[in-house]
Picture 1 (cartoon, one colour):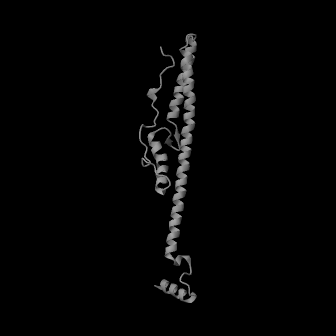
Picture 2 (tube, rainbow, N blue to C red):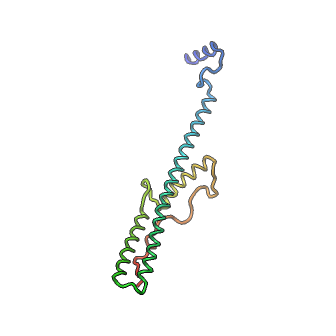
Picture 3 (cartoon, helix red, strand yellow):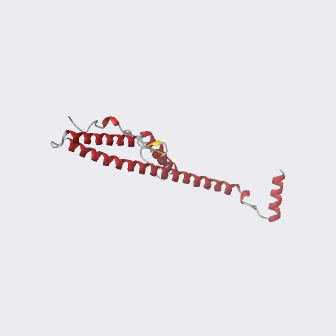
Length: 166
């Protein structure tokens, strides 16, 4: 009550309705909303930057997998050629198995504690960034920003066990 009396007295003395910005509740509310929007935009930007970093890490690992698979194909061709003897086939097979292990290691690699090649990781990082954009009204995806289809995990059962076919 004393506070409101002093406020009224100040208004009478100065002849102004608003002496301080805090006196205008409407403007204070607008300012609070602007600050919340700015914070939301900042968080969205951070989510997008994290998603881009995640996808760039995946891209780098997949480039390595491409090179490894190309080399595995070369080894398969060399090992199955008629001029390859048993000792060279053993060398090719050893390198082939090392390359298989490298692909397995890439399949289990992590980025900030999140597996790079699991469908859950894609939903967590990329899905959250897409949802954040959708909530801000910038981009609206037709499927609602949810991932569908096959999982992105690497299946180790699909890798051949040896370079030699016989």
